[in-house]
Length: 408
Image 1 (cartoon, rainbow, N blue to C red):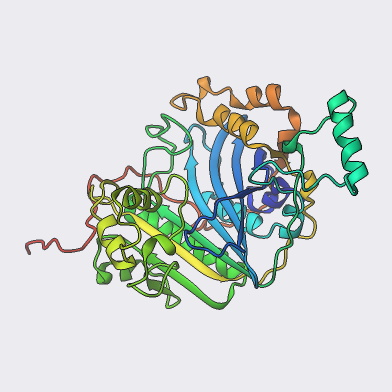
Image 2: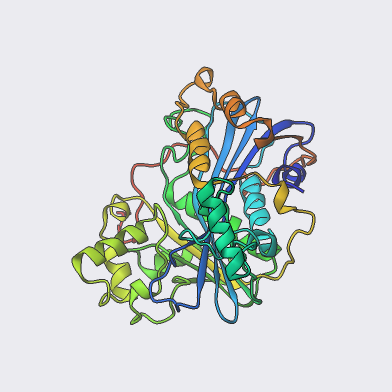
């Protein structure tokens, strides 16, 4: 089963789509949190997903997956980096939120055992050369290389890892309304789904809440949300049910040192501020409490727009999708992965006539990177407003702290 086959049940019936889903080759990376034990191994994987209709991008999603293998458990950190709509064409009854949630659900259910069987080492290594068993074999192998009869490229060799149960899954993301994230110049398209900061935060919280419920997270699951710079009382109005609390999933003690608890993630304001603390020489003395306080004063959080940080952590209860075969997935090395991504993110989406990424990607990378499907989901008479955000322009100002008093 591929992602496209999985999505068929969540796309409008009898409507044809093309799905682009590319994964980067799993690679050993630097730990995303400073101070982790040297016995811990971090493997990084990127996912890039685009849903096309009539050869035009409709929805795009970029997700970073980190698998951190500890001595007694495996930590699966899913960072939702970017999600966007192009707004170029209308697709009746398409539920954007349902598609996004289903993509995240698919990624979280991928079999880690298959995924970690073929991992690029962080540095070139000869450890995986199975043919070298004895000194004589080693000498012969080196002689063959010198004579040109044999070649060895460290980049073509892999290492394998076994995930250790239990698997503790974490989902984290940063919500901030922007005109466009993945589709340049699409912000003015009248069909584009744009929400205010407040509406976007509520929309994502509902999606994550549904996702975690369907995946049966258990084992003291934490549901957290915070708005840096906002009073606790103003954040409470965003919590959909009693499971959710104000705070973050990274630390339970305000006195903890932030750099040892908060992950350093790509294109994330928390990570940028951590790097700023390192440059200033304050990284090892800034507490979690101080971190959030100072973060709220940075540019991303003080422009009058509601900006949220969502996090969920718990033991993954649903088993892996057995029908998904890792060897059937489209997996590219980093350079090729980024090249393909640029075909999508490098276009001008102000006009549908300018879009060529579908044909360009096929010409360069082959037909196999796309999967054509027809939706199977029956459309009920009343459509959910949760899964399909209303189309509206973002307001100029959102009150972060609810401290503005209006005259009666």
